Image 1 (cartoon, chains in turn purple, yellow):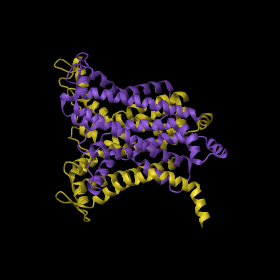
Image 2 (cartoon, helix red, strand yellow):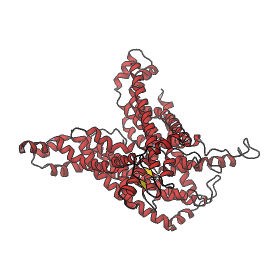
Image 3 (spheres, helix red, strand yellow):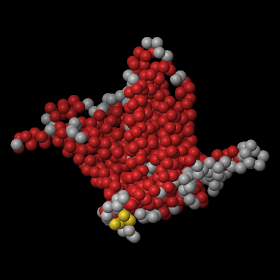
Image 4 (tube, rainbow over the protein chains, first blue to last red):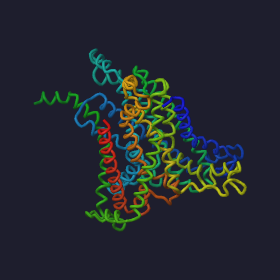
Length: 269
Length: 298
């Protein structure tokens, strides 16, 4: 187990992870209708075509509404869960947290089909972006909790005790001491949930009815070869947006770790 | 009585329950209840445009006597097993490098780099593999333009790579790579470094220390990685659809066909429950074997 050879392996692995993504901008700006080498020349036509597309604009606004609402919901629920699981001891905590975190390992199709069944057969409601929002909260909640648990766990409890000793109530302590310290974690959890929702396909595929979201729109276009260059352009924008959101999330996560004075062990999970 | 009730309300457990109840209720209503609904529907019968709410085992009998279901289930398990093997084997050295080969202040940056592709549109990453492996795709056209494929090249015709189990496995292995790295990394981070020094001080070689100390202590992470990759890949819908070209369906494609186009929801539910049971049983056997193996190893 020599480290230099491991480092070369690690870099090769990273290249393998990223290589497909680098094809996106390459072909999004390529002046050719098929995705193949050799490259033809530089064009921004595909981005212009993308901007003109009405269905796509509709899908984008749907996706943004879904992502904003579901990530707000997931983050608020995650604050409760992360606070409860890091600060309090109570019976059945393992089981309760296990249920809430279950979507991390369950295949997404199970969430999609089971919610579809409940909406259509039991509750008899029509599918809309509202049903997608309900599903996306369930899916992003575990990841939001994972981020917030680190934020809450690194909190020094003596700070809260000091505030209570100095006459603050529980609520005001939470508002004045805890909330500012975990705020970077909250922002990070929100951005991660937002990214998950923006990119999520299968639950939206089951629950959106005839409303397009960005991923379901992309999926519907993939069988038309003529639509592929526009999809490459759209993919470039989506991946750029995801990387931007995640970088901001990571910035806030690190700031949160620094603020509570803990050692940075890295990572979202 | 009142005093006792009041002190309970102020107690740590009560506050914990109060805090956990909103997310817990949400999970009960939108996760547990829907899963129970699937279970219930798997015992109902599909009538024309409606569902007959009477107990029947017919869906399960139809599922398990259908040779197509068995072929698809075996294919799903095989693909998921292959993907798990590839991802975990490739991921271990990375996790090891992250944990042992990097200065603490570099770890966060590497983990961030590894997790980024995982968070960026899964659908687009799968679709990119279709573009890469396709008949007129990136690999074939690149080989053609440098003359390896063609009338005068080494290979006469473009390579047929899509619509195969191998292509599905490659795509899924790429998609789930970070899933395998993180749990192994976490368990390696927990290893007390003085144990490794002790092993070497006592005359073990680095390699034997790795085999006898590091690897057994990293096993919980390997087990977690295995399950966290295996379970979602069995149920993957997008990759068989796009990379398998619809010719290599897996369980999720079968379920989707029953739930949406065929509109036979009890049947779709029975297939989902059956597959879930098989996956759960395999996972338990895996955990049990692992525990046994580790005990013998001690």
